[in-house]
Amino acid sequence: MVSVGCSRQAQPATERIVFLPFENLTGDASLNWVQNAASAIGVEDLTGVSGVTALRAATLSDGYLAQASRFVHGYFTGTAGNHALQVDIEDASRHKTIETIATSGGGALAELNAAAKRIDESAHAFSSANPEAVAAWGNGDFEKAVMLDPDFGVAWLAWAEKLNRSGNPSAAIDIASGALDHTKLRTPADRARLELFLANARHDPAAREQALSDLIQLTPGDPALLVASSAAEMEARNFKAAAGRYRELARIEPSTSGVLNSLGYAQALGGDLEGARKTFEQYGEHPADKPNSLDSLGEVHFMLGRFAEAEKYFLDAQQANPALAAGQDLLKAAYSRFLTGDAKAADSLAQQYFDFRSKQHDPLVDWREACWLYATGRTDQAMAKLATASNRAFAEKQAAIWRTGLHPVGDLESLKQHYESTSPTEDAQIRVIYASALLAAGKRDEARALLATWPMPWSPGDPLLESMVLPETLELRNSLGLPAR
Image (cartoon, rainbow, N blue to C red; front, side):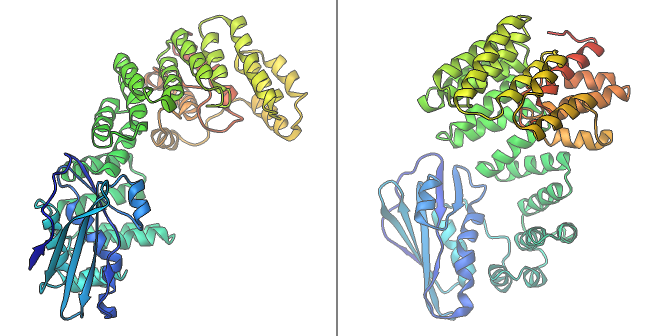
């Protein structure tokens, strides 16, 4: 085994190493599995290595989109029984090969592991040391792979994922559960990935959060894991933990500005409004992100009941880019002003929104005006306006919902699961529905906790329920002894 080529170049503290597909130039079909699997082995061997993010890409263009700092690609030559592996490492910024690794005589799996060690000496061995099992896995025969190596965690996971994709989730759960019965899975990360798969398949948020936390400890610096874990912590309303995850993600992915936006929400909802303000301001330093940073500042102030400040930020966002949210920042500002107690000024802002939408030839402007009237407590006027709406079928559905009211559908446990699987920035409708159900069940403290922050009426959901969020929130707060404003 030898290595030739240029000396290793100095690399930045955190590198994005992108593996491209390898080639089988031996002419022997028994080695074709490397075309599918060689890059996956390289990524697996480097996953969890400090200062390295290892990724796969189908093409060079995809690799640049993934912001690669180094590319790795290679090929096997000779014959299946007497082959050699050559791996070229390219500096993505200079478009230049900086190192060539040549290995032979150890078998394809051993040679790929050795190449990974040359890329970074902290690389670990692959999930299986059985060459035949790895070849079966590389060919997509996962059942054969685990038969040959019952401790091959990556193959067990691939089999479960394949079953799940094919529409057989119960069998997928059985396979993943069976895999965890093997106490000698090659790596703790293999076990944690299987536990994460099971948590997702079983829709178990607590288990998902634990598995993600375990994986981050085992494979630090994996951006995909940090993204998933941050979202899980947000859904669990563990805002301080989510903020920590987003900070780490921002550290290793500094060019991804949207991470700062998410961090700002986590900080604000975790009680650090000043920290959130600074984060959003940093996010808005890029001109293209400035309008959204202002909108985000408006939203966090609204959720925390700082309505006058929220209105100002929403109006600033509208001025910075009126098209950002199709004029919706005007409506958000109107809601904010209404909750300060100034209904007349709120109507004026809402009218600006309707005028803006009319200029955009919005066919639902009449419905939007009716919804505003209903949301602000003028049911008779809302019904009268709805009667003039051009889309009669839609208007009739809306009127029927207003007549029947917002009634919880499902038991408390199903409502809780729905709520806990919804982002706190998008949970307005399910939150008021769940809070209403809790109050009806006599669980006043739990209902009160849900309304500690204000639901945003414009949050994603059923458009026919949007106008009911604010009046329902005000009614619930009154019943629970919370301040109306």
